[in-house]
Length: 323
Length: 220
Ligand SMILES: Nc1ncnc2c1ncn2[C@@H]1O[C@H](COP(=O)(O)OP(=O)(O)OP(=O)(O)O)[C@@H](O)[C@H]1O
Ligand SMILES: [Mg+2]
Image (tube, rainbow over all chains, first blue to last red; front, side, top):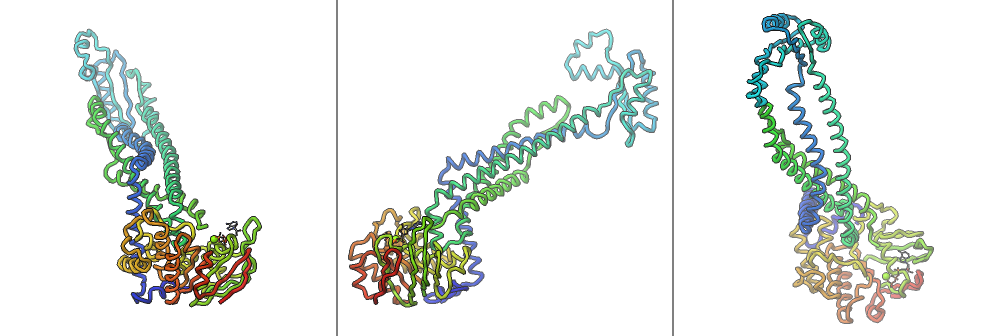
């Protein structure tokens, strides 16, 4: 009996010897059996399973949705993000000729990558079109807008130094560095990203706890069965297996629900967002999580399910011994 | 096959369930274990199953000191022993076939072999036609027989039974005992704890009597 306990028992009628291959097959069979059995148990109580799935799904969807929102904000701001731009509002007294020669002088400078002139007439026309106030504006005697020169510093040039220099020019009323608010936006987004990660960490921890508790209850309700299985020689791995699969199914379902929630939210928001974008003359559409992202979310759910189940199983299964 | 060497089992409250018990059961033997309620019969069987460890002394099974079997070795040890226990018996959400098949599933037999062996075992206990029934639809005696089929289906070398005829009428009890004798005939070591003195004294086997945890004497 001792070491190779299995071998002698197999002699007798069948005379077949268990080989490594058979062990592997048996192990695989028990895996698919446990997986199917656990799934059946999960589906057998649809109401409570659905609640578990929803709880996990919402907890996972929240940080993912916030992450998606941030990603979209990054895409939108990306277009403003890169080179800083200095808007030079010329003094009201400056006429078209002076503005044009200033523009030409600026464009020729080595520390300026690009300069473009928006004449006061062009600015008014654009404003009228965008605002819909064209009737009102047409009746104005005087154009209240100044000439505007947009200056993009060359790479390697400190934009604030250039801004200070240009602001000192007589013809320039005001020099506004557009980068300040871009920087502010960037650091806000950085803060947002950190918050999302922190939130994700807390919620993931919560998901593991929810799953751990669900599996603990499953273990508790099958205590008798565990005792019997251990009594007839079931190893810890054998007893553990169905519960790990239960955790996996809860996690996978929760991940799928999370992906679904995010997709629904995106679908719900995409139309108003792109309508808003059109107002800003952009054909921007929301960036989603895609098929790969959805699959990753389901996988993440499954992984968390396994982790929670493992937590519960290692804490509670050992305590159940035949008495 | 089973040897107890001055075994004492003291439960936490300081109560000695077994005191200095020494016994030796040979490979081909069928032995009855009797004694008043609380004498220590179940405790003795639990030590063989490694459901508990002795406080003092040694338990040897097939020449192997059970003190050397660690907690990881317990499942393998138990797979070599068939048990019929007083309480926790069957899985009530599985049918008779699945209940009997459990030890084979655990040991990793393939499903054809499982089908063959389970039917052979059910045939022996006369429940072949009930294989699809759920345990709750069976009588107490039938449930007991399902438990017996499960205990022998893995062809263990040792069979332990704690009050296997507790729920049965005299005729059925005699039949069950006959079953155990059949298993013993094919080389299984059988140890049966039983109150039913009238029945076991009719059978020609060794009877071990416990009183307050002590061994009284062995009669052939
Ligand atoms: N887990 C335990 N903790 C403390 N004491 C126990 C435990 N199990 C059994 N005992 C005590 O040990 C003694 C022997 O118990 P055991 O179950 O072996 O008796 P038994 O001979 O099987 O009795 P019965 O015929 O009623 O089944 C009893 O006095 C019992 O109270
Ligand atoms: Mg007892």
